[in-house]
Image (cartoon, rainbow, N blue to C red; front, side):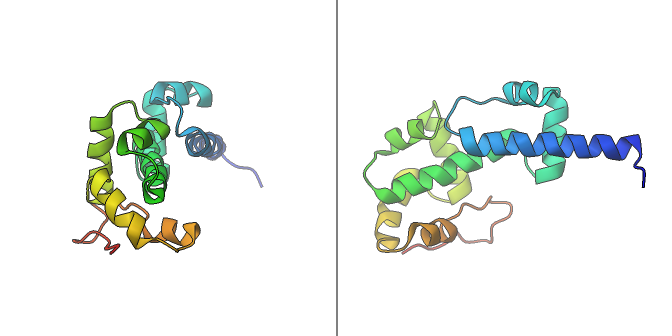
Length: 149
């Protein structure tokens, strides 16, 4: 069974997009930008952004920030690092941008989350805590934020 050149190209693009997503998952704490990700995938930044959004429903930068916020949530639940330390540990270089993005995704500032989540998930296995506290974008979230306490 032969496939059309368009279908073959689409499969190659999907494989490259999966490698980009895997790189973001693996290297989220490293300085990553769309141009560098695109170069690594042998695509233009615009093409990568469009195709990534089509495949995964968000931009590469949005996906990266979601991964960083997920990791930040885990570090904040531990309670032994300050918000600033967590910000830099997950690869963010601006505390303001980190706090704004965290609040957008989680529904409360990182300092508030840190205080509440450490107590609310105490004694809970980390794999369960991660699932229960997974960030949901505001546009996808119900009208209320998940209640931890």
